[in-house]
Length: 515
Image 1 (cartoon, rainbow, N blue to C red):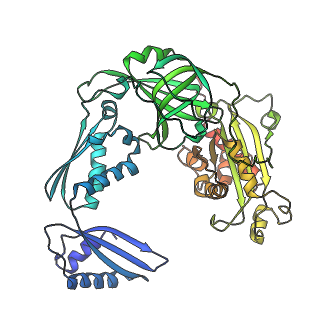
Image 2: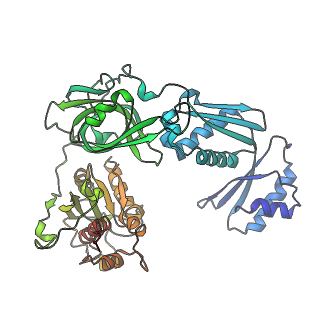
């Protein structure tokens, strides 16, 4: 489709060289293909005769089994429209920068054919981004939407750094969200934090002025030098850590102001803190909690009750069991060493069996999963599930799961609640989990008003990005190459256990022998 303009120019001797292809939309259900062109303000309205001629030619040239509809849109350079599209660009491609754009940070100047766009950013963010790449990406985006000459300037915001402001005027209003009691021992960053903290599990989407509390884990300090702006050459400190409460965990970032640096450096792992900040997406699209205030605190109730997501107090139908260590390794074997990803995260590796491949019409018949904690497989979750429709014969042969086996099994509505509870606060993983398993899990969870917002790591992608080179990347091929046992393939628990071993093997610390 990208050659449509060159084909038109050739056919009509560049009569329509001013046209730009805006979009091609194919609607399979309507058997319709809509092609939309842009033309500049300097061109008079395109005659109906020319429109018909273009439509007739494209219909014959493309030879689709669809009706062809051709539309023409004048490229109006309305500032409000351009501004809306710029914000849409950031929301779609650079969401991590949205919190740093004040209302006055986007300015548009120029005439009907030339536009100058100025974007000013906070000094810290301005020094860290690749402004050349950002400029190229945004210009490409705008040039696809408009016919104009765009000039883009990305400059440093002259205002004081947000992390140098005390922020003692920021007080959030109590809402109906679930909160619990803590008391402050010492203020580390900023002033008072009111009201009480929320549970982390309820805050995994973009949200501002959020109060959370929990234990600090894996605190890392990174020093960097401002590359641009009035304070270029000045050293700064960025702290990253994981904040964990009884409901889940979230990655945190804090750009330290000088007055708080010593206290932040002295704050040890394992400290219980109360924080105020914004939940945002960083420059890589990952959800993080950007700290504005932080206090050392204690929880008033050492075992706070997490309100149930189900007002009817759901009764568990699947009880996870402990995986004995003897099942995992011989006591005389040398215990493998793993990197921080395996050692410092709780990871649920799961697999499902289904009645077919289409999540819109097929159902889950089995969930099998294991939990990796501190470098060991510690728990297992396994159950058959009774679908609403019979299991096709060919699927029975593949999975060895028959209709008789699932006749007395629990329904997915109950199982998915148990799996949701068990996996809270954990990274989810599996083999081709993004392309297949999560589609079924998401559909099942939606039916009972649950959302799995866990971080997801697809083990198949991890393997493909490793140094392992194979003829194919089927699980059976990978486990053989890594000498991992897979007994009883196409049963959920067996596949999940083998996948967990593969994921751990990918993060095994390779020993370097001294020669």
